[in-house]
Length: 242
Length: 113
Image 1 (tube, rainbow over the protein chains, first blue to last red):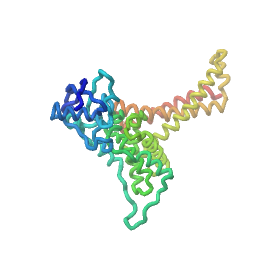
Image 2: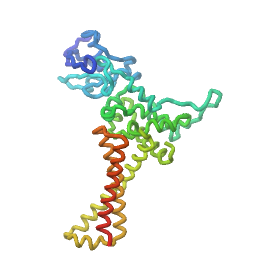
Image 3: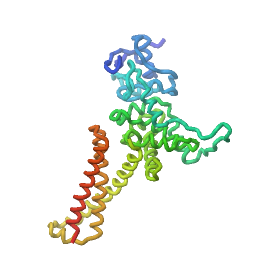
Image 4: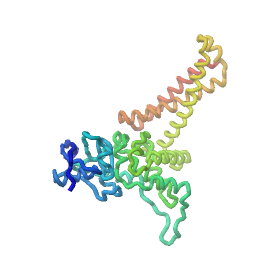
């Protein structure tokens, strides 16, 4: 078994909204991820610590937390990447979401906004119709492609200052999902979707800070999707279709 | 929230911003160019009076400001002070019309005759 040569200081948020940071000393290991640190604390130091994870390989998006003030997937973040020698680690639940306990936040407001943005496919064909033919090179398909890999981890939502200022703002993830559907020619809910994403709680509230685009672990640019929605809603409004 | 109104205000804001960007540059360049040797009020008026193209330029400038400023103010009132709704919109419309009236009055004073 590998012997840990040194330890480092980790502050972890404990409790709900009125909680506080608790301090732990954790052995520093090579190739250690932030999720390894949280797991070590929970298994060896304090079994009452609550946190979420599932896949551990950057597929599920459930382990997102605030690491030294920046929202990240903890499973794909090496400790070495975020702190230098002698530095401390601070772990908190995702910003902009209600805290359930410790590092676990309530994702309901996040996903309710996906529903409000009509971020779901509304089919127009039946099982008896032939399959739709969408060229991979078509403009719409390429636009959808750019945003389709979102796994709903909430990192962008947690990084967005507009969400902090304006609780009803739909946020980057929901608007990005709506944009992929706006570019889906098979979808039958276009007019309602544009109405849902327009306005001061929708795409027009975005200040183009680009925090979502900077922080997205999948390299998606929700800012570009939101700009697309601004164009689409502007065109619809000028045509009187909004 | 009225989606159509918001989207149209956004378009108006962007188009007026593009116009203002260009207008401000032309305005500043003109001032710098015209002021090189010093210029009295009488000299300015002698050049502007009856100048229809410049009058049209500044009239458009005023209209762009009157469109742009109230929409921007609306966003600030909403985001910083949580002031929103019909009353705020009506007051901002009055503010926009007042800007247009005063601005066009100034344009008339400088260019008419």
